[in-house]
Length: 415
Ligand code: LLP
Image (tube, rainbow, N blue to C red; front, side, top):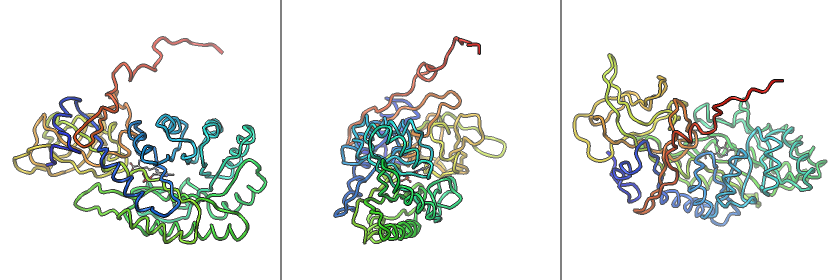
């Protein structure tokens, strides 16, 4: 059972007012996390660039921006969202393996502070677009350090077999090439080895590789003014089991690995800032006793929270308010027509009945931002709570809005 209040707001009332499924975010929790990371970074020339992909809600972006953070973006869409939330271009870093020339052009026009380049081809493209605009792009090379982050294979990015970053050899040739580019200032390094990392060792190893290369570059005359250490710090999905590193210990690893580096350190945390600040309220539609398993059918589905179906991810699920009755094992499933629409198997919960309110926990990251309209289910509503107050930050999508962009009368055009 979870306390029926969240950041001082009654969850039962929220569910009644806005309906379910409903994402609820604690502003207080996000604020405390930005502040504790900022405190841990004290004395360093550091910039927190929130990874927008974790949760791209305008209200959340505005809040982290007001606390001094910048943004780590991977698309023109995330650039637009960041700028609309008031994040200035110079506090934005642009990552990703597939930036198009058009996205690069828009980002350069918006004054994006740094491009984390992931291939020699991209470096050339960046240089060409910057030349065309008569500007100089500031860039870093993303190193693939071939380190195992010990996380789910689908969210691991720092192994040689992954599409991300370049090997040290290739990075060396990017820097050699960059000497000829008049419109790119290649003066940074970047590394991001994966997400939901629960041990500090992979971070230490990756940073050692990057710092070793930084020394090599500097001794061959390339000044390095910034190192972007990526994101990836894990959170507690399974309260009884997960023990993520303390943020101060994480920063201590960065301090230690980069102790001889005196430039700017960029961090790109996503999940750690917002995941635990979110819960997903959902109602039980009905219980269905199958011939082998007992199904608890809820009104949230894989389109609202795809993590369990995509990665087999665990989320704690609890009753909101009083729950009595014997503990039973349920397969907790959504209404979508896929067997993969399963949030948990044989999960123990006090006996449930239709209409009960449940909370799926730790849904602040990679939940609403990965939602879809699959099975023609409108995107859910989102609410922010803050010390007893609440505000709707995204209304439930209407059926009209869901269908609006489709062309109903086709205009066939002959070749
Ligand atoms: N920087 C880069 C270049 C990234 O690719 C990512 C995440 C981050 C920063 C932020 O990582 P974080 O601090 O949030 O771990 N959908 C998956 C997670 C995908 C992460 C993608 N990249 C999930 O639900 O687990």
